[in-house]
Image (cartoon, rainbow, N blue to C red; front, side):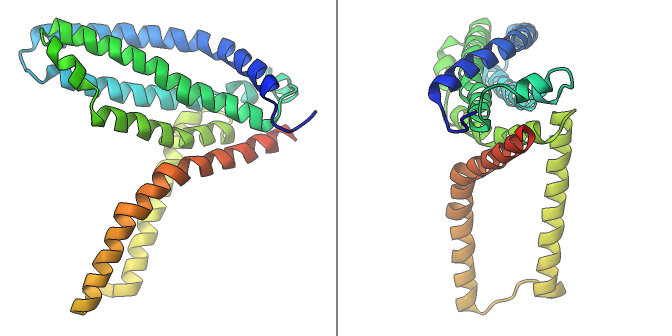
Length: 247
């Protein structure tokens, strides 16, 4: 099989994956939508708090992100199922095409579908609360920041979907906790080795220089790494994981 990227082949595979994933996705969306409609109706109708519509919007964002992470964790279930893995791995599709199709479904497609559901829910909750004029203000900078953060951080669960063969979501969360603890322990140990119990003490000139360096790292380097490097790096690792399984 030609391992180069072929957009025609990618299109056929994408249609296949959409057909296989959307049946379960629509069932999940229908169930969650029904539950959130009931919650929204109860809170919006019986609550006089003027911020109730905004609070419900925040609830939708939490469900949106959590649902996306779970959906992403399950995108390669076919590859890990003993009865289906052989057929999936022997499809005349390259690892790059499988990666792009899975990412397209779990990131742009999910963002659009779930976003439309949130728009519908927000309009219904604003109408029930008698505060329709608040509807346009629900889609503010916070909303779009959450969408952007999801599109970056879902790459973590995408990698988990290619790495773990069962309980992908829970194992990915556990791996995140372990990595966070290791980073915290390493940072604390490094700080203790460098500064001991006395803490950081600098001369006035060096203190200002250190402050500027820390500010540059916090305000420039870390945001750049998060928005432009983090997700592509994890997707690249996911690609090699897929290629490893396909060999």
